Image 1: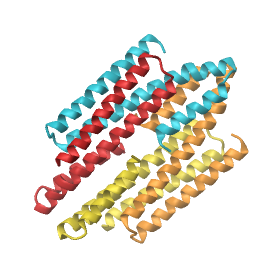
Image 2 (image 1 turned 135 degrees about the vertical axis):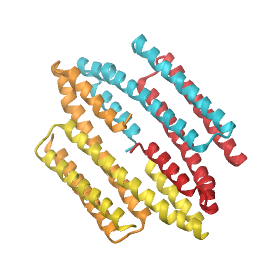
Image 3 (image 1 turned 180 degrees about the horizontal axis):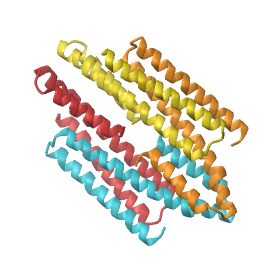
Image 4 (image 1 turned 90 degrees about the vertical axis):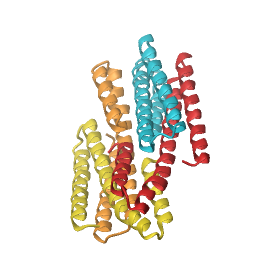
Length: 90
Length: 90
Length: 90
Length: 90
């Protein structure tokens, strides 16, 4: 992974970690349920966005590389589809 | 919220926080992309499960209470549907 | 269900049926994959929107009614949560 | 698309069309809401499964082909990620 992408992903993960701690505080202080739900929804979205960044990076480098090299392409393709499948939960 | 439910939710949130830190470590150590994706998928599922617990609790107490009291029921119902709508992202 | 809501839902279902037939034609005529995917995504969204309308209607009438009558409320609540759970697929 | 895959996809689409008509009948005959919701959930899942089949087929042939030919690969990759992004709705 390129250093710049890695830093971008780590920043997002740190923000998600902060959001999870924020939700813990909200639950502790008995914040209004609907507000907590909104925060959880935003954690879900943020996690899915990081997943998409990783998916792009993986496809762009790892999968594409394997196809260009003509080596291990089938395996990489299958793995990619499996990852997408788990994410779509279909 | 009942003390027992609160503790249950806090435990789950702490586990999610740990998972997010785990993903940071994986990215740091350049773990295999597909494994990181699997972990992110598990954070998404765990967050949605906490949201569902909160949704149940909120509906069971807050919404039901408002209907039983005959006060603020319409508002609570609308709020609940809005929360579900945001979660389904429809 | 009120006649007006029923008509609204039936109209949406007929539109979804038309979209599904449209996708069949696209596949038949070997339309570009990404365009077919976009159409399928729109069927998914439209189906979820109908589900949300039904969920609102059900909660507003059936669940709320049971709570107001003080009869069968627990069962209705559980059923509602089960339906939401299956929809969120958590 | 291979003839066998096409037939498989068309069969699934016909089944989805039948399910959508089934839901119309259920609404017409005022079936129980929760049962209608279950049917709609099954339409959503079935549509997502067809989308995944198309996504696999598209990646396997169109995207992979472009990479192997060394022509239009960037564009295909971007298009693929856009399609996944819309499906994940992130």
